[in-house]
Image (cartoon, rainbow, N blue to C red; front, side, top):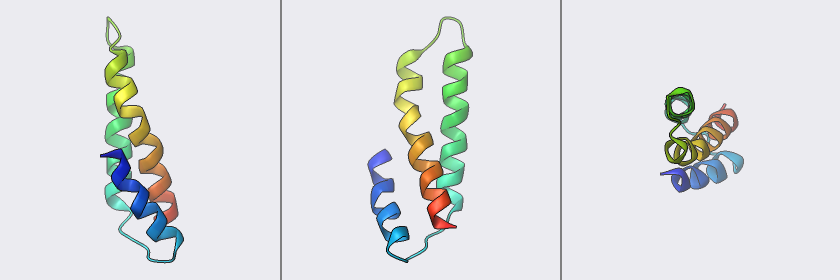
Amino acid sequence: MYVSYIPKIMDNLNGTKGNPIHPLVAGINCSLWVAYAILKKPRDLPLSIANFPSIIFGFVTFYIAL
């Protein structure tokens, strides 16, 4: 899932601007999952580690698509 943002980032950098809503929503969704995994007792580190890259890729793709 996270690798799919790399072509979108490349397209946005080349001038083909895409829809910024999907990466924004994906970044927010994964932020909530990471917060849940860290705040729950006991902590669920695999869940937080698995969702953390989507936060970075989602928000970077959103910023570049603007």
